[in-house]
Image 1: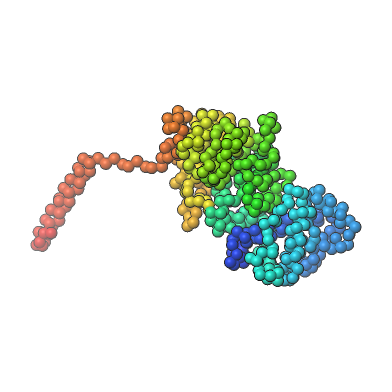
Image 2: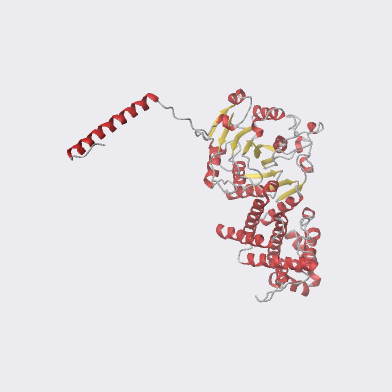
Length: 536
């Protein structure tokens, strides 16, 4: 399927969502819409695997027959169902019973079947509790099919669901059902719902343009990015992963460059967004053995695999990316000051956990890895505890690049943000500053980075290019003289110097113009005199 067709599927589904949600809050409707899209993907994937597993025994149905082939096979082979499901759990890691498959659900919706709501509830419950292993428990926990927002009573809710599912089924039917297609449609819808959620979207969505920059940076060679893409990333971490799009972007960049990736790890505090991330992984064809998403608080470091005190057993990642909440208030208690992530640097202030988030990720960065994190500009110049942390990171040679982005790129805030690139074994002893604040396309609600803007940033980072009013390599000596202030405009100003005006030269030009004007007027009056006309 072409990129245009993929985008068209996203637009088709968004038009359905926009039309059907009515007075329902966009965030609430998002959860229903995306869950149904996910069920469609799981069903198609499962039916394809079942067809392969059963071979010639897989029932063939006429086009007009709306029954599912699996329902017929289950009926005719009741004694073999247990063994079949055991095989499917081993091969595709989950089971969906025939009555819960999307094709059956869509047919029930088309027929306005009064049992659709009950069937969906049972299907979601089965998938959560009996279909997957424990990793996927609670996957649909935020989908309340008994909500008054769907209708005042069971009949109204069932009728509304029939309409929604029928429209989605019709909208999807024209398009391919492969994982890339549905995955891209899922991403498109997340972006559209984020646009309608305003500030709340900051909890779960990193704009694709910014995600691309971070992904390109961390997949380049850490020591010398000019050498190009890494061949392999064993482990990648995003500890504020939202819907998981940033992790998926890193995975795509390395695979597009014919590299390989081991496992991707994400952590997310918000339960709804955590469920979105798990669905997003599967929708993009990432096997459940290839990712691990943890529901928890990164600042408290409540993920067991990251809480190993023995340095020899510590988890280390080849790439770390993050778009944590900006200037988040947190509990910087005295006890927290003893935490292995912070004790060498000191604690970020209670009013802004930006450096706490940074130090969390940096602690788990491998010696040959690259970390890229999105932060508000305040981290570059604020004093007090933050200045102390910034100074240590600089003097230890850990801050590699500072990138300033344009304002109003995010749904959650209009303020300009920056990207900090950090390394534990940095080759260059200077810091590269990139001031991209004036390179964007203005939009009605959000500004946008075009492909050429993204490429310019990445190319400048990769080859450490210097360009007047855009980028510059700054020595540690100069940064030290500025009290370790990293305010980008101190080092790369976008202002153009005013032209110096030579008043004597201007006066001479004006005198010359007046002289020529007088000569022209005299000549003109001479012609008028010869014609017997009065002078002007």
